[in-house]
Length: 289
Image (tube, rainbow, N blue to C red; front, side, top):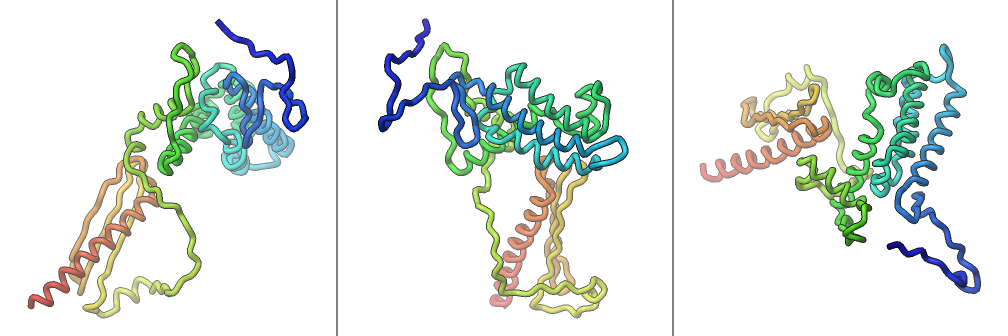
């Protein structure tokens, strides 16, 4: 049984008639009355295809944008525009119609990047450019957004609308994605990044040869850190000396999901902690002696 809403008189607010519509736009996302997200995905695909078509006029077989430039345009401008609000409308990519629309965007981008023939298979083009299939990439972006919201305490499950309905909430879909990647369910760092331009210190980095000739100083503890990523393996290392004697060394494997920047930061943090512990031991030894 279905109920079709009808009004004998139009809705009025402050004397103005409110027209009934099947969709509306809120903060750049088009919501339709069935929450199918068809209209939003269609509009976004049309919008980003317009950007690509503008670029197409500037690309030729032997002239125009280079493949590197076109790849940058697609990854830095087109794809982020397409993914805007994906955390909300991710449920819409499940239909074949919307998958076809989204795939056509990436296919056009791949053709402009590679200069391939229009008849080239989409899967082959993704392999050449190294792009993840667009529907999988959008799920990843939606999960990233959901993770940020959860870290900030803004991620809550809404009540189910109907036990017999086939509407799956976007929150459930994102939660399923997050649960499928165990590392995302670990404790996350909620600290907001900030930039402090006020510095009350100076940094001098002498040449390696000059540094090795410096005399040992009992008040100086030397710390060496490094973070690296080789293929998919990430690691960090710490090496600390005092009076030219090794007082601490360690290396840690950080799995496959960490970045080289996280490895560098982890190494610096471990060096600071180890240096603090060592300095306390040295001070205690002097007191006891």
